[in-house]
Structures are given as C-alpha cells and as structure tokens.
Image 1 (cartoon, rainbow, N blue to C red):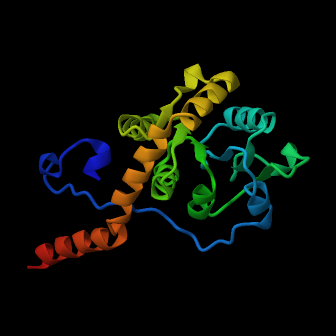
Image 2 (cartoon, rainbow, N blue to C red):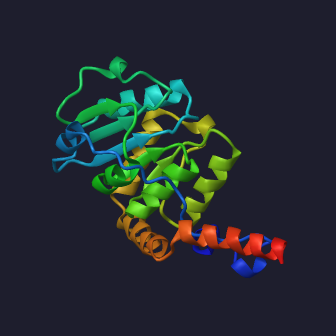
Image 3 (tube, helix red, strand yellow):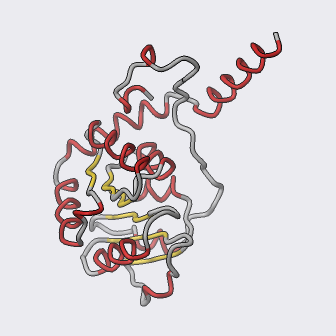
Length: 210
C-alpha cells in the first residue's frame, strides 16, 4: 500500500499495481502452551525469523529473550530444533510452526527478520516490531516499517543481544510505535488484497483476450 511504501500509486511504473495485504492466514490452532505463556502482565514477545534467518542469530535471539523477565513465544520453522531450548516455562515456549496472525494479536511486539509475510502479520495485528534483516528485500521491508514509525531495524552487522534488548525497551516504552501500528492495521484491514489481486489478474487476461 502506498501509505507504507511512501510512493503514490500514480507514480508506479506501467502495469504495476498496489493490491493491499496479501499473506497466508493458515487455519492452525494456537497451542495451549502459547496461550499459557501469553497469559500474564509482563511484556509479551513473539519471535519468528521465517525460514531465511540464520541459525546463529535466531539461537542468540531466543537465548537472550529466554534470560529476560518477558513472556516469550518463538517459532523456529526449519532453522532450529525447538528441543534445544528446553526446559520451557510458564513464560517461555518454542515450537517450529505457529499461526502468525493470532499469535501476533496476542503479543505486544514481534522480533522478526523482516520477511513480507512476517511483517504483514504484525501490521495486520496492529503490533510494533523489531527486525534484523538478512537480505535486501527484508532490508527494504524494514526500512518502510521504520519510516512508518511502526518499528526498528537492527542491521545484521550491528546485532547483539544487548542491542536487541535496548530496542525492545525503546519500542515498549514509546506509545507512538503502537499508535502508528494500530493506524496502519486499520488501513490494512480496509483493503482486500486477495480480491484486488484476483481482479488485476482477471483484467489482464481480459485485455489479452480482447
């Protein structure tokens, strides 16, 4: 959406279109362990770095978050085995896959790698995020998040556990991040990305066949 890219629709190249949000909202149940972890007053953090995060940074991130008083839920996907982070606790749980949309809605903020789907889930949920990008597309995604005042980007070369905790505290104690995230969430939900995308494809096919 132009509200998050900063580029007006009228300035897009020929045959380029904005569709609105378009991401998988898989029909998965939220595990009871996640509900238990997020049932408390402490800051609730959802950590997910898709399938492109590096094992070293994801491991360091989860271990650092585990050492805090925050309530932490992490999804490792194919990157790491959740078993290496045992023992789990009332405020800490790790698994491979989670339904990102409802889990983001339960959390206060997300720690992510800046992938398209991960970012869109956070924005849809109206939650701020902190991102550590691993490649150019993710850097660009997070630049837009920073420009929109929704979160913070930590360049991979500047990453450390201490820097992560510093940025978490900054986001958690500055209400503007949450306010901006809620505003962007409302804009996201005003658009039907799947329907818009389908209509663009149909229009293209009709032009080709006319």
